[in-house]
Amino acid sequence: MHSVTTTRFELKQLFQLMIPILVTQFAQAGLGLIDTIMAGHMSATDLAAIAVGVGLWMPIMLLFSGIMIATTPLVAEAKGARTPEKIATIARQSLWIAFILGVIAGLILQLMPALLPLFGVPENLQPKAGLFLHAIGFGMPAVTMYAALRGYSEALGYPRPVTVISLLALVLLIPLNFMFMYGWGPLPELGSAGCGFATAILQWLMFITLAFYIFKSRAYQSTPVFSQWEAIDAVWIKRILLLGLPIGLAIFFEVSIFSTAAIVISPLGETKLAAHQIAMSVTSQLFMIPMSLAIALTIRIGTYYGEQNIHAMRKVQGLGFATATVFAFSTMTLMWFFRPEIISIYTRDPQVAQVTMSLLLFAIAYQLMDAWQISAAGCLRGMQDTQGPMWITMLAYWVVAFPIGVYLTRYSSMGAAGVWVGLIVGLSIACVLLLTRLYFNNQRLERQFTA
Image (cartoon, rainbow, N blue to C red; front, side, top):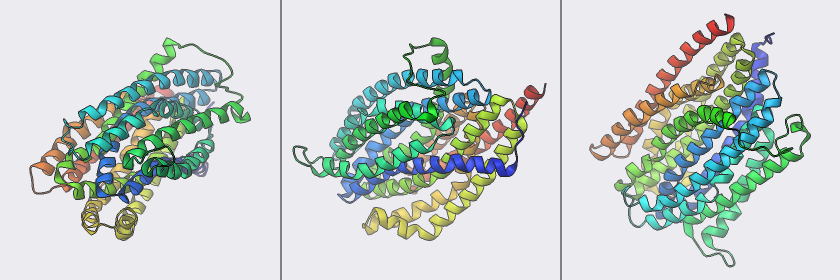
């Protein structure tokens, strides 16, 4: 029997999920924001070194933690299908995968500093960027296991514990950064590279806190993750990876095109690189709004997918895209009117500020397409369609956007703006293709569920 839903009920459900997730996303993005601001107030060189380090760490981190997003639609489906006995197993198997992937990601980051000369990173930035990568790599197992537990908790309808932990982490990062950046007691002064050590320690504290809360809280006792030891189950591992690997790769293809833009721009000098990093940081904060909505859409659609309720799925999609559109126009307005005030938070350098002002105009141009494409991807994940979106993002960002960005930046007079033109083209293509895929998925599921 399908549950009957209304517009008012679905909006309430979306916002009850989205608002805590949004606070969580802002808090987690705020970790990078704090690093950027604190490094920017040390020197342009420190800010540029962080830009390079984050540009390489972020795609790796999001690739491996993105795979663990598979936990969310699988738990949501089990909840919707009323098979709660599967939920704890899904979470335990996800933790196994998360631990293994976290170790692999950490090892990759240990090797990354050796590649900095090959990427053309200026020699004066290599020591700090390299130390940042070495340090932050130790936190990767905690990042991936935290992502698995977060997906489990949010899919059950409990996003608030993750939110509280993320806010506490935000507060704790500032003194940790000071300790490692400026030196404290036996700790030497590491400059911007100290952010890597602080963040790695923080990631472990966040994982341990969430695991302890889930173990102790009554809310999770009907699907207890830590009630028993469970060996690796090849069937579940295969299912989680088949669903999660395309999600991780799709996120990697999208985020890496943004992050590696810093590498493309680095030969243009510290001023343009610093300006690009500030503009990217601003848009990354604002992107948390449609991303949080997309996670909420994955959960709601995943639940109705388990119920095989296509009519409720369509209603959720319609409300999701309407909400995404309102938010996109709001962020465009915010950036247009408050660009100088926003930039002043990051830097006092007038040259950096001037370049950033022009780059933010390009960011305004892609807000709507970005909101629609991430919402479409969220809906498709709820339907457990992840392979198609993976190929779409690879095509849009790496076959089209990256070559355009490199050419316009390094071989035309556009300079740093060339990368942003490439991003606009890639996002537009991704948006159109993902919306088309969602339309055909709806048609297929309607035939399947009503047969």
